[in-house]
Length: 123
Picture 1 (cartoon, rainbow, N blue to C red):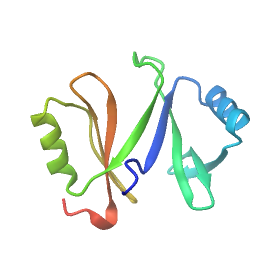
Picture 2 (picture 1 turned 90 degrees about the horizontal axis):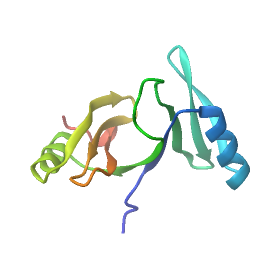
Picture 3 (picture 1 turned 180 degrees about the vertical axis):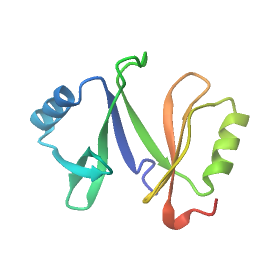
C-alpha cells in the first residue's frame, strides 16, 4: 500500500516554541530552507523533507493544527470530487516548484491537503 500521506505541516502561532518542543521531544531535525526573501523551517531526514512549520498570522482565528498532505493524481479533479462529497476548499490551489496543493475541510471540519507532485501534474 502506498503511504496515505507524503508530508505533514504544522500550522502554529509560535514557530520557535513548536520547533523547540518537537526537536526536544522526538529529536527531529529542522532545516531552514530559503524560499524567496524568507526561510521555511522544514522537518528533514536522510530522504529529504517530510514536514514543516507554517506561521499562523496574528489575526488568524484558526487553532494550531497538523495538516497531512495526501497524494492525488489530477489535483483539480480531486478537489472537485471532494466538494461534491461535501468538502469546503479552505485554501485554493497553490503551485510550487515541487508540486501543487489545495487544502480542504471534510464535511465534519477536519483539514487535509490534496497534493500533486509537479512530475505528475497535468493541470
